Amino acid sequence: MERVGEIKEELVAELAALRRRVAELERLEPERKRQVEEQLLVSDRLASIGELASGIAHELNNPLTSVIGFSQLLLGRELPDDIREDIKVIYSEARRAAEVMKNLLIFARKHTSVKQLVNINSVIEKVLTVRAYEQRVENIQVVTHLAPDLPETMADYFQLQQVFLNIVINAEHFMLEAHQRGTLTITTQRAGNTIKASFADNGPGIGKEDLGHLFDPFFTTKEVGKGTGLGLSICHGIITEHSGRIYAESELGKGATFVVELPIPVDNNSQGGSNE
Image 1 (tube, rainbow, N blue to C red):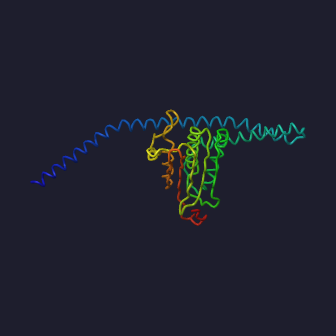
Image 2: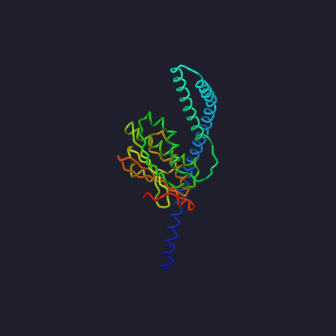
């Protein structure tokens, strides 16, 4: 009888715990629904912005092509030196504007996910090209240590661009908030069977209580209206889908380092030496 009483008490306790769990789920359900609705709204806005940017880039490309073409024709003629130099400037700046439009189209366009062998150094260099103007005018110095013999990884080129672009823009944001300038150090290396890319900034750093939540959906340390809290969670999803790892190391007042690790395919393992 004593044993029956113990079992009864255990069942009552388990039932009470189950009821608490059900009540908690019922309480969380509206919040989860709200988060999903917010995520859909943000995704819809981002898609609209992408379409708008794509349309603008296409419209500007046509007159830029004409400017480049006619300036080339003029440079082929006999002209006074001062006029020739002016036309060279027109040609050079039109080419630069066309490259900006090309980069805008790359990031605005929808892409079907396709994995292929990718050198992440080239992905990082492309992202830095896109951000070069903003970094120059905002006094952001970029120091790169990209391993020249880095093996390739199997990845979606455009998804990796999205990840690295998000990390770089976040670093810029917090360095500017803290110092109105900053230094971003980007390093790539091989670590065993893994390719490792680290992005170290000299911003304000991240508190210990926030480090564990950085990749949670809708979590952000930015001011209200300056961040959706989706960027890093999307990055986490992309890297996880690539069988990799993304994490942050930081202390308050000592900057932050975001690290992306991606596997080296077995067939590609013979490339490059260990940099550890």
